[in-house]
Image (cartoon, rainbow, N blue to C red; front, side, top):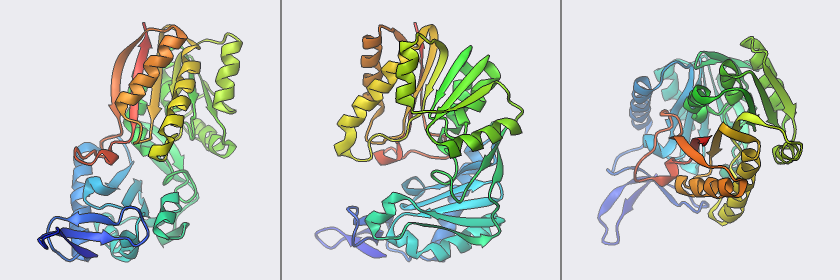
Length: 350
């Protein structure tokens, strides 16, 4: 913890300092104050109170979203009675003991795990590791999202176990989905199982057989029988379906982040265009496309431009039904553009 001052020596606030990261300072407060257990207790309490106002119909949500909750470098996700914590910089990592103690007082969880296996920790010279910090954590945790039940692997699953930021977009996509649907990059079946209720059939595709096994379990838990899970490379699959003249009424594209840095944006733009172009060739008039980007380096305006270019090449005229972002428990700070990373656009072929 350091005090930050301007060139004239006037205090600007209190920050965590990193001696290895490109981000040397992460401002915690605009006052000079101790960053101790009392500090964390207050910030965590405020974060929990915000979620009580904006989170509904779910037992799984983000409790702390880094800078957006005044706790840069800290992520806390709640899965029912269990918490998954990520400390992504040196300062937060050093404060982990106090953070866990405060979370225990605030939430009384049955268990807390550290999901500190994120690649970004390497930039802070921190080890990548996962561990149970308190309690007994089962291999699978059952949670409810939008009336559906999902099993989550909070020790080994991607991110902290589930893509909680798409929770509200799952419901939005389900409102428009119809006919025969194709869900690309389905992971554990988030979009697919939500689409199933309004579609005749859903084909859910992912390259990970491990993720698909859990997705099949989730479908069984909810007694959903009209979803077929397929292991495949999505780019190859879309090209093959287009060549074979396959048609769908709804296509969902929720790929992993293509642009991990600014230098990767140009290549990411080509990837997003190719993906959307191939998807659009499978849709006819009235077809619905749900397309997403989780790369904060790719702005919403850039994504819309990419999809517009793909629509011209595919000979499809698109109308925008909804422009969406991450769930409300992943708040966006107006002056911190990095907190706005997820874009989700729902379109219809006119």
